[in-house]
Length: 582
Image (cartoon, rainbow, N blue to C red; front, side, top):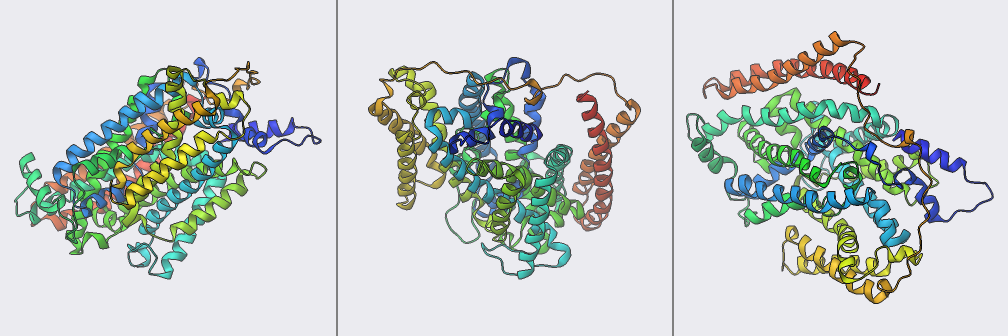
């Protein structure tokens, strides 16, 4: 973020007061940092990509999605095999579509779409992106508020609208905190998110593990000492293949399709070109598996088990529980902290991205002003807790609206040369609007709406016809619009951005200013993580008669382990980061 601000400030200073740059020129200044392809000396290693995906995809929405699968009648096979298939397809899409284009161009999606679609299409993409990011960040704030409400005895909010005015006030407070932190401390929050990631994943696992005796008891089993026993309990109690209201269950292919499209905007929509342009080779797309199989497999499965366990403990139907209540019943105060931090640490970068996308159409606004406006919209959205009932639908719509941009880029990058069409023909002709791209995008979304409303295809299946329709229409219309007959003009190379302003992988020194403290805090943090897993295991091994006592005794010790981890882990990370930046 600081590099972005420095670059923007330098560019604005170099613009003479007498000049009147166009809207597109002012917009491009915001992305000047990304204009030049990434050079080889700026490539990042495997650990960066594995850590980025593992951290980003263990988020607040995982609590919601895992429970929704249970409510929507998924079976054991649907979950364990369907999620495996869908997440594998997502990883392959990153590896075979997104990463290859990113490593060939070394550009962000903004600049590549800018060359293909022109300023108008790119501007529309940014506005749409900003709106969707605001909604997504609002969902994160709502989930965080579901945990904050518990100490205030505010009822769970599981309708699409708030039923208690106190919850609205609470969301406004949480939203104000999130927006303030997004304005003042994005980089420090990103560091805190890194510290949270391993603990967060363990909280999902711990919440599922402590509920095993309760699941076994409800299934009429003495214990879950074998995989067959676990499968029997899971099919009887958790993923039963039946919905609470008797409606048709989700089914195998819908589960698999959802897992595939959950991040459609990032892989098929090519948004993650911004990340993979730093990858040495396209095969680094495989590191997305760390996010898919830890966050979108393990975390979703654990969230479902945690939710059913909490429902059994409270003798309350699962659809009447929110994420905060589920985590609190399973883990106590660490559960509340897990939900709050999961929402907080993911809402902030999402809000930052919304502000950046919005700034593309308000280039004269300051970062603080843009983030404040985006934050106000986000907080208003967060007051409506639709996330607990309609999250799967929103994710599907989110991907469908942005995926056509990826289809247009894929078509021009790979298919145009095979049909004798000219890449970047709109840029060569200096067009502000690439109308074949805009029409193809709009027509594909209209087709999706028609297919969904007529119940021809389920929402989760629409991404394939949308993607194919966009690509075919764009190929035909671009050819008719003159993409085959373009005089290619030599491009003027952009001024080279100083290396100090480019995000880079800095080679760490091996020396440390505080080697003893660094080693001690690292070991202490690791011990706290181990304790955070051992304590739930001790509850899981308790008999049905001893479960309540063991469960209650675990919670304060788990709180202690959590506090120790955050203190030791933060100190260790700061020392490691300081040495890494030397």
